[in-house]
Image 1: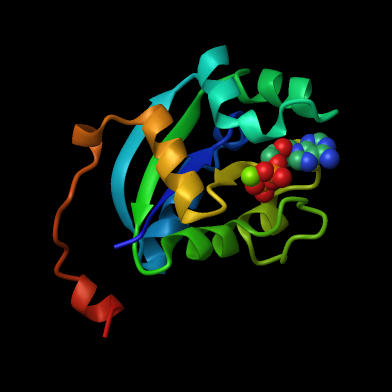
Image 2: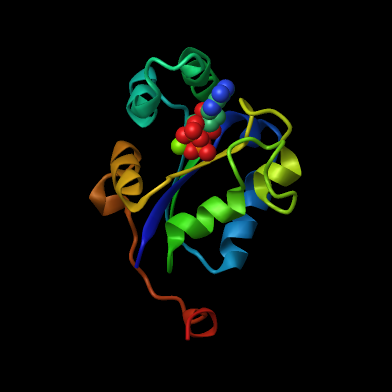
Length: 149
Ligand code: DAT
Ligand code: MG
């Protein structure tokens, strides 16, 4: 089953959206595989956002993402990467579907509440920054028969 990396950013934690966000992912039918509450080190932040090095928003992004605790999660399911991105909504909350997490709770591009990996390959790379292999839990849920044909 496909896995994706999702992270509630410092603004999402501060704004008490943690429970709401986890609730939405659970109700979608995705399965929680790993979860950690942590404050990113500068090294983790730089590894996470390496694709954005040199962009004008990079320094602000690194200082924001290390400014407070985050919730790091791995969610598993059919097409988990794109399912998570759809739940989150597009990058700029001002343009995101209003029913999405960013669309419903955000206003500003630099405070968009949640991160989700953009491909299976990015998910693999990002999961490895935050979790060791043994920290991903593989388990069955009886409800799966009501989620998948
Ligand atoms: P996403 O988080 O949807 O994958 P991204 O990878 O393009 O978006 O950018 C990473 C984060 O950087 C994004 O969530 C918010 C911030 N960001 C992106 N473009 C920005 C910009 N032009 N100005 C300020 N922050 C930006
Ligand atoms: Mg991205």
